[in-house]
Image (tube, rainbow, N blue to C red; front, side):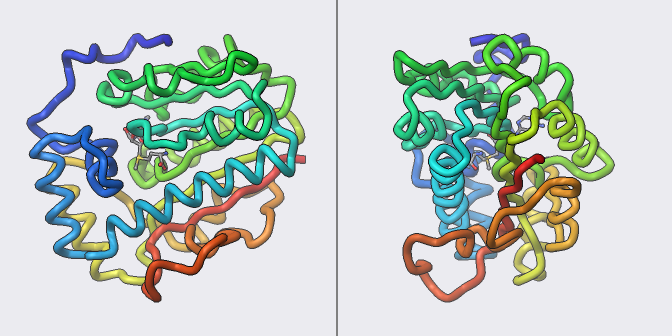
Length: 266
Ligand SMILES: C[S@@+](CC[C@H](N)C(=O)[O-])C[C@H]1O[C@@H](n2cnc3c(N)ncnc32)[C@H](O)[C@@H]1O
């Protein structure tokens, strides 16, 4: 585990953090009253928020399994990992191929505090945790290269991360820098929030996050598609996460305000 970021002692319980709010939505226990308060406020605005978090997590599982099973990729770089929630990405990928190497990255000290749970991979594979900010993609590549061979295919996973990084904060630059470093045969999998379906609810949610000093941006279908420029999207392209190769019927008929997609690099 490598980290030059904030110490675990520096977990800030005075303001909500995205990883902990998401943990509350998923029914986890690794959150503080300030996170629960924001999560409850969001749920009061949009009762579908916990369901959207579950749908996003299920997208991560399906996309991770598809990449391991169908592309033969044996290396994953997962940025914006979140608090461990089983099954985690390494468990999915290593259940297909035990020798898979996984590097997790997050900038929240709460994730660092739980990183031990992320490091219990197969003896044949490698799992590593790096404390870093996604807005430093070159630093992440340098540190991840201690575990991952960037001359071979890598699946870059940015799931429910980019809605915390505005365009003016370098969202496209960071994706471009990371994708450029990937070898042919690599993949990009991402998901992020959209206001395409329920604009008023999503806008009120963004305001609630802003009141908690958390930046949240929603992007349209076309804007999400821009992150995949130069790559080959696999079917069904950019879709609501619940509609991306679904394996079960949706929890209800309401749309999920998150788009996801997977693309390959030629
Ligand atoms: C909603 S959680 C998603 C967790 C997991 N990827 C999933 O989809 O189930 C978003 C994660 O991104 C992390 N994050 C937000 N901004 C970040 C940044 N600039 N650098 C690194 N991680 C970041 C948060 O700490 C949080 O753990």
